[in-house]
Amino acid sequence: MKRLVVLGLVCAFSFCLHAQVVDTTVCDVLKDPVSFNGKTVRMKGTVTAGFDQFVVEGGACGLHINGIWLSYPEGTKAKSGPVALLQLQAASNFAGSVAAEQRAPVTLEKSKDFKQFDSLLATSSKNGGMCLGCGRYAVSATLVGRLDGVAKAGVRRDKAGKIVSLAGFGNLNDYSARLVLQSVSDVSSKELDYSKSMAASKEEMPPSQGGTTSGDPVEGVRKAVGAYGADSEPGKAIARAANAFPKPKEENGVLVANGSLNEAAAKDEAKGPRDSADGVLYNVSFNSNRLQGDGLVRAMAHMGEHVADIRTPEKGFEDAALYELEFRAWNITLVSAVAYGQKTLTLPGGTLLWNSIWPAADRNNEVNTALKAFLGDTELLSR
Image 1 (cartoon, rainbow, N blue to C red):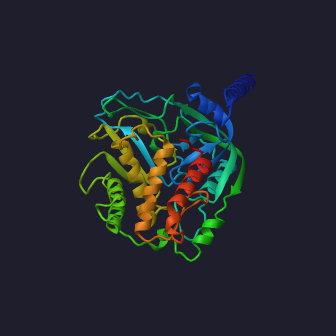
Image 2 (cartoon, rainbow, N blue to C red):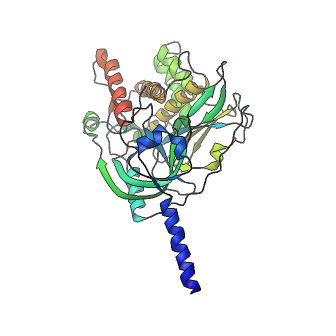
Image 3 (cartoon, helix red, strand yellow):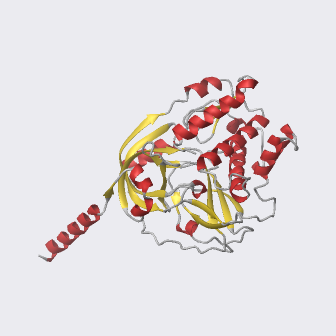
C-alpha cells in the first residue's frame, strides 16, 4: 500500500510539472517578455546559428528584434551556437546597482532529437570563399525551456552618455528574451541556398583556410589601415575598431576569450571580477574551431566596431538599434576584407555581401542592398 501511495505522489508531481508548461509563440513572448520571465514555455520555431546570432524565430513580429536568444544550460558542452559574441557585464566598479536574478536550474534532455538538432545547427556550409558563421541548415523544432525576460534590453545612459544600467541577453545584450533549452522534439531541417555565393567564389580558396595573416588577429585588423591610409575615412574606421581592443599588457575592460558561446552562465549576469574605465566589461568570445586565419581577423574587426559603437558612440548613434549596429559592423568587416584583396564575402544564409567583379560604380548599392536583405529577411531585424 505504501508503495502505491508513493507511486501516486510521483505521478501527481509529474503531472503538476507538465501542467506548468505554458504553450506560447515567439511573437507573444516578444510582445511582453516580462510576463513569461521564469516560466517554462513550449513553442515552435526556427533556429538559426549564425555569425553572432543563436536565435529562435517565428516570423516577423513587427518589432526591432524578432527573435528569442537561445542558450543551453551551463555545462552542456554542445557543438552549435554563434561563432562570435559580445556580452556586456557590469564591472566591479560599476556605479549602478546590479541585481543578479536567482533563476531556476534547467536540466537538458540529451535525447536523440536534441543530438540531431545540435548536429544540424553545427554543420557548416561548404563554400569556396569566406563565409563567416555560415551554417548549412535552418532547423525547425518544438522547444521547451525556461524563459528569461526583461522589459527593455541593451544599455541605458544618463544625460552625459554614461552607461548606468545593463539588461538583456545574447549579442550586445540586445535581446529582451532568452530561452534556456530543456528539451527539443519534432526536428526538421531546411538546407540553405548558397548557390549564388558558391558560383561567385568558385575559384577562390577560403581565406579562413589559406590565411594571409598570422599571429595576433588584432594586429591583422590594424594592418588593414595601411591599405587605405591612416588619414582616409576607411583607414580611420578600421583603426577605431582595432583600437577598441587592449594593447599588449593593457587592461581596458575589453576581455577576449575562446570558448563556449552557447550556454547561459549565472556569473555573466552578476558583477564581473575586474574594474573598467567606464564601469563596463566587454566580453568578446570566439569559437576558434570555426574562425581561423583571416576569418578571425574579420571577426575581430566586426566585434571591435561593436565595442567602439557602445563604448564611444558617434553622434547620433548613442541609442542605435541592433539593426544599425550590425549594419555598421558588417561594413567594417567588409572594409577589412577588401584591404586584404579578398574576392568575395558571404553572409550566413547565402547573401553575397561582396564580389570584387562588381563594377566600381555599383558596389555601394550592391553592398547596401545585400545588407538590408540580410538584416531584414535573414536576421529579422528592423530599424
